[in-house]
Length: 118
Image (cartoon, rainbow, N blue to C red):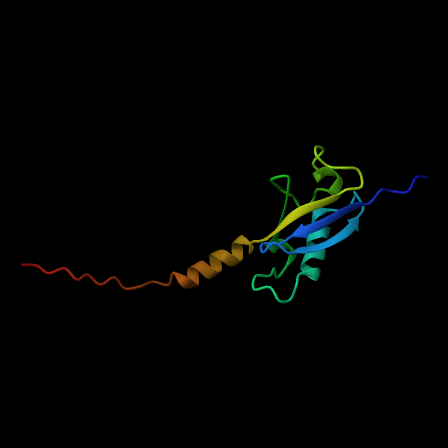
């Protein structure tokens, strides 16, 4: 039985720094990659994900879905065999958190009209 060829990935952060490279099985899911990114995220960064759902992975201009495998997400063009693939890791809080924070920020404010009637 032939040995499975591992895929080497690194993750580029918003400030240009990288996490990795790490080697993954082509059968690894995007959700598994996100868990690793959260675990390896540098502690000195101002912006950091709290959970895997806060991370969006982008490869070849596409946001990758959690249920897809690494093999399904590899761009077939421009990659060398056994080459290193760079994916962009973007922190985006989940929509539920953003809505809650927005409601707090948008607390009802009294409108004061400063019109003068002559």
